[in-house]
Amino acid sequence: MLFLTLADAGPLPEYARATLGREVAGTVERLVLDGVLEFEHQGKWCHGGAAAALLAPNEPLIGHGRIGALSLAALRYGQHLGNASEDELVHRLYGFGRRPIGPELRGLMPDTATVSDAIGLGVGVGGRVTRALGASWAELPASKDSRHWRHWHPRVGGRRRPLRANVKLYLSPTVEALGDALGVLAELLGAAPSATAFKVGVGLGGICRPDKVVIYFDGLDALHATAQDLASRLHGVPAQGVPFTAAVTEDGLLSWAVDPVETSWRYWLAGRAAEHLLQGRLEPDGPPPWRYALQRLRLDGVDTVRWARADGVVPQASER
Image (cartoon, rainbow, N blue to C red; front, side, top):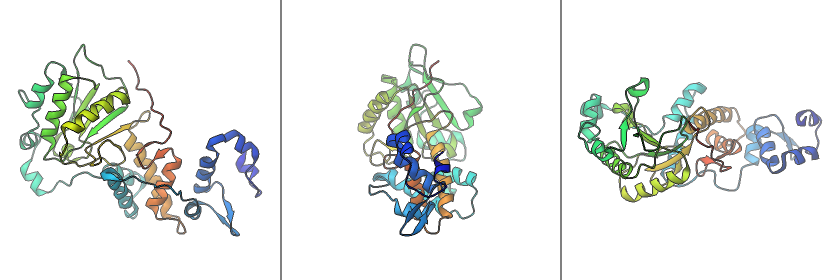
């Protein structure tokens, strides 16, 4: 109705203001940036990138700290990927921050067994992690996902992981610091299993990704309590950092996210960012594509300063 009403230029109809309420500004701005609507400015009709330059917010579009820097670097990297398809751009953004696997690492850790030995993961029989988890946790049997992750969950009597545990904490130390960091995590979870599950990347590829350790919770209160405890125990541990996640520590060692239904937060966000970067490239009169993407992500409900949902709504984890 709004589109048809404004086929003839005029002010925003009162029924649109009444219907949209507090969402009117964001909704209209989104329609303008997407080219559905346009507005007149100094005798010219503006939409898309040209409108984005005029509608740029006064507040910061991105936060400080390591995760803010990584996220901005990821968008700028995506901007310069030339003729990459949208699917390729999504995967590049999602994987940004992965440590390159060069000859030195391959020589030191040629297979999964030597990866564990080289960095002292302690996940084998009698290892530090296995001992610390003790009787409270059990590793899940091998499955089709085992080539990417090793999973642990509380034993009977502990907390059970929901079918869709969508509140998660990322622990992102450097490759060299992973063994010690994982040992501290295991000691904490073994003594107080507040998490519903956790997983660790498998092999050299798994430990070089930024989100190499993921801990699941059924609510943000439990997540933040564990995160603060870990932050104090792991102070000074060198961090890698997970782009597009909400920072717990300024150095990026700990961060969190809440997944949408049926996908992960980072993969969903990479998809939206890729779409907006591609659109930004088509806007010669607009801001740089990375800035256009940030501006457009805000209108998707993303707080790009904290990299969390702007509305603060946390979906409830599914129950058994």
